Length: 156
Image (cartoon, rainbow, N blue to C red; front, top):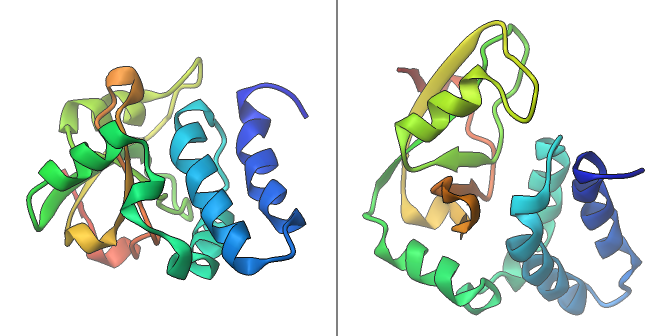
């Protein structure tokens, strides 16, 4: 495994090496809130499962300070957007943008890939549904604790 396509999997599997669930959860949240912006090809369903398993260990102070400030500044509820292909059967993910223009860029493609059916989805969620913010790369990104069901979102 190499490059940004494998970083997410390495981070995901790294946490299973810890024997102490409490320590594993804190380590997961500390690592993932700092490394998420480095991931491509994110296995969203697997991350959602791991995040749910360690939800009790999540605390705002495990986020980088600038991400914590960004989360605190969000309204409640918050409207978020996700850009991706609307290919039938394609699941939504955990990563959503606060800015519909950022979502539109992702809908068209990302890092050399082009989507054939670019679509921007929108949903309004309570702040409590947001695991953390990612403030790197000017993507105004939020990461949810769980992938929202397709029927709960609307197409822009």
